[in-house]
Image (cartoon, rainbow, N blue to C red; front, top):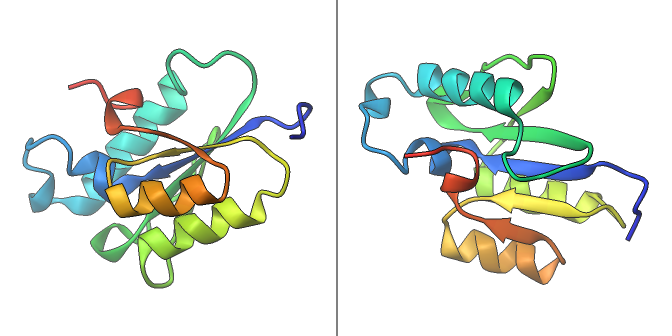
Length: 124
């Protein structure tokens, strides 16, 4: 584990946005932008030290721009597959994947990532 590198936090935008029935389905891109802005402002509550936040978007949320503190990656296909690929590319870095998707949690867990649910970054 590379203790000098910041924690890589990969957020499954579709899953986190969809975790609260607040009308997100009427404006998926806007919901992803609000999540991005919350991450930029608040980071990852309860985590001390440096973090690198990557918000993975897909579908109607493609086109969300990055902001300082949050890199946005549009999945070329499946968001889950892109998250798995990013996790695999992290090498020796510590990785936290934020999602409630059980299959995705299993897949990234097998690669050594820590997993946490949407409430980690989105209070209800």
